[in-house]
Image (tube, rainbow, N blue to C red; front, side):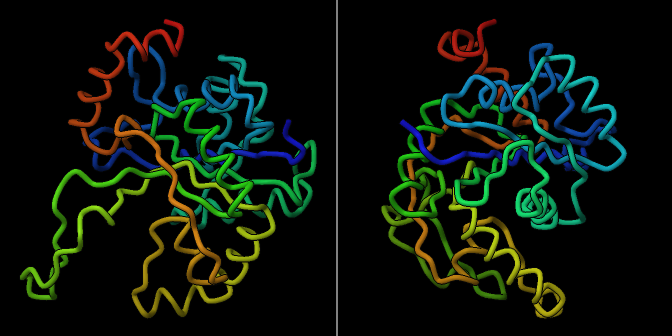
Length: 254
């Protein structure tokens, strides 16, 4: 039985630049449903997640509220908010809603699950695994061991290091953290935002924020090789193939 609240932050504030489309990728249709529908559907049906903050572009809030949240009956979406310039700005905006008491039910000492809305193949099994891990460790991310050999390059484009493949993971979302831990990490990040930008230090995921600003260890949890992020037109083709698989069709109740 769960005794702490679990809030999902679903990020859907990107654009369609790498998709070569005028339509933001999260609204592109995948088997007659917007891409963002799939992750929200899993969250809606999940026994793990209590509520959700959906982060989108400021100009899209009304559309998303009407055509996504209301149309498909996503009752767990507590609020739809505007994202920021960078991914971490969007996460920060959502964390401020949680920390500021902006949720219908407060979540000050529970867990936050941060997920890219462009990853449609989130499953209840993944959510359960990461929930068990975050209870134990306080901070965890989903991912899978890489299938490929990875090379670390130098500044001139030459290979300088080949890490042992058994220790290399491709990181996915959701990433889950104790609410206080991830909020504290982001407070520290935002205080040094301009400094880090000037130094050219990028923030690529939420675990990196926790690692850099709290020193808290982050547990790696098995996700799925199907838990892909839709970024390019080729990814849509792959996603379509996954959806033709019987296990996905059954899961999404087509």
